[in-house]
Image (cartoon, rainbow, N blue to C red):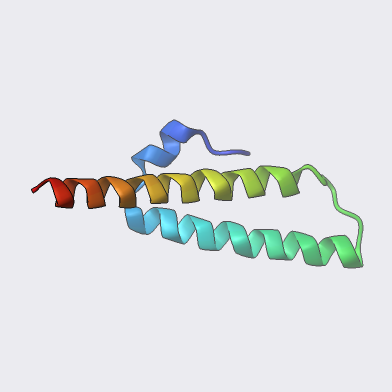
Length: 73
């Protein structure tokens, strides 16, 4: 199941970091399974990679917003 941008925006910074770590572990597990056995759903690779990208994009946007707010003061 892919995450929606609205769901990601509701997450706290720590939750985003935790979710990225979890998804990267899951992606690693999928890669291992792909080598050793057949995958049930090969499309999971793309879904997980896109979720990681969405999370990292939100994380970067928040970091840039904080820098902009700090510079404006």
